[in-house]
Length: 212
Length: 234
Image (cartoon, rainbow over all chains, first blue to last red; front, side):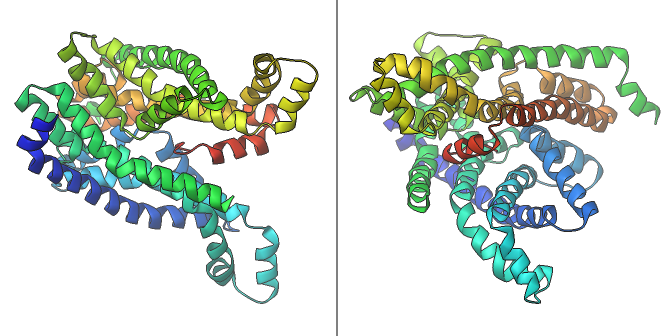
């Protein structure tokens, strides 16, 4: 294991950087898209609610790999040339946004409905009530589950290995076939993933206990 | 238009269905294994046997925080280094079972924790031993509460079997790739078929989970379980 780190340390760190970069980009956009659909889901308009429901159920029930491969295979074939990293990040964003939408929606719905009624009665519009009354309170509830979604996102970003996204998992495969020491290479890759996910996981558990 | 129809010729459909069969086979095997081992591990984690439970808990945390793809690779390419060489189907069943047992173990622990302490105290005070109380009082209630969460976990298991195409498991995803690899005109129809097939299986499981939630009257309690379970995908 140590010899792997010595010989291929740079490659592994580069992969770690790509994994982190891809996860952060996907998290950013998934948060925006996910929150938007979560708000649509509690919108008074039935049509918008149905659209949001369809979006969420669609992306939650199709494997991440199918979504990612779609962007890797079909989009370059018919629309525009994109790299594996970009298609992987898009797939990851869409997939995670559905889960984040569910998380944020349950956060919004855990806020007492009286809050919305009170705000509306005070003359705030739906959006104002959402923006100033509901979302700030919902945000507190959703921090720990969102952290967990981020952990899932980091784990799921390993799907970039399928589409030549040069992430940690991809570099791990390259090193495994180069050094012929598959076992110790994958152990090294595992340690690097754990450095990202395990501390966050324990921190979220602590936060959940504190907020509960 | 003809090319699109050609993609759904009987030969292709049959080939896809063969893949779907492997997907279902691998899913069912790993569901059974991970259900059994998950409950055992969850109980070990809950009962707090000195040192042993802590070690098991730490191993569960490690496995849950690793990507499944890594575990699949490790099983298929890593284990032959120490002389164990599984074929793709076994490798994916083993990898999925290891990963999902850890996930189920966490759900089981959360399910047991959600049972009020009074139940255990009451059972003990009527003369049951600790294990009897766990077996006859706590577990039946806990399992009822966590069924919806476990079904949700199995939905992600079915989706995750697609990851095993990377070790050339002849599953649905792999067979679709073979078909559009031979004729690029079939790419979009194949992705459509993939999406529809996975969606039907996963969405009906998801409806089953909602139905069970409603039927068992656990909607609120299982919500608590889901909240306690860390890293559950839904």
